[in-house]
Length: 439
Image 1 (cartoon, one colour):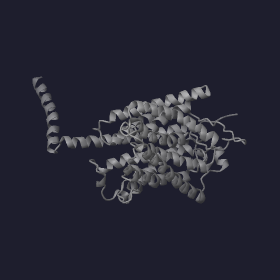
Image 2 (cartoon, one colour):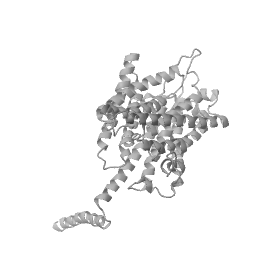
Image 3 (cartoon, rainbow, N blue to C red):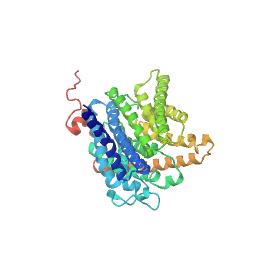
Image 4 (tube, one colour):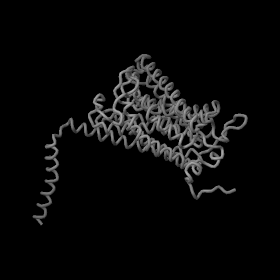
């Protein structure tokens, strides 16, 4: 028995001492440990953001009709699949390559050459993975706004081009050392870079496509077209809320950053305030606490806080979230009833409008430099310039791309295909094969 105990003790000592010896032989140091932590943290955050993709898919599928559910899932899958390839080949270089005028990156296509100018401590592949999932997020925002009537092939072409060019140009301006970065614009995790880019592109797509059949009566009054599964949509919102911690906290690209805790609190509390704000507003205005507005309110709070999550304090985050929750409900109704722009999931309002709003609020509520904290109007002016520049670029570029696609191959499915559903007509199958409505 004693020999057995001595043997076990010896094995235990070896398990402790051998790794230490190996670690020492590899020259481990506090600096190398910090680099390893940063790399693992950034990859973990990237995986969380990747998990937002099914969140978007479930939200969009739940907010539309059953006959188009497989089609919207297919779009979300291809946003990530095709987008990952094209961003590797083209988008990353445009966004983070070397330039001379602050407009567009001109080096590193296909990840060739080096990216030493970025000053990264960990391998470039870690940063590529993190940025790839962000690019996919910008692209997939568009799919919900154009749902139930766009041709799949036409959508896929636009998805590839927004990932390859439209989004990376904005990313270069603000995150890649471009001209807006030089002005001092703050968009920590992408209220404008990611969300407004997707939202404004969605606005152009929805405008050019026109409303779904039956959305508006002859006198122009909007009719509600309920989504087929609010449970799915709610699950999608919770998944997005969870993934957003990777989106915002991961943008430190440092697992040793002391800001991570504050960013996490600001992210969570803004989402919560957005849901509460949207619920209260809809309850007061429509005498019922609307479920879809509340779900979008949570997303609006998340989008709104993304720019300033590292710059504002928790009270500022609550203010941004509450106002974003109210704003998204007002915006959805305005687009629906006044402009007659049919957005089945509210993507334009959640991402475009609330992304711009959150970016502007940094100029007011940033603890360091915000107008309400004695910093003057300089930061606010910079934020507004950035919002306007991105709006103009994305609107013009999206009109060109969508317009060219429309001229060459058309954007919208036929009336017969739309009535029958895109699942069966575009993909030859139904999302719910055993589901039938009988008269």
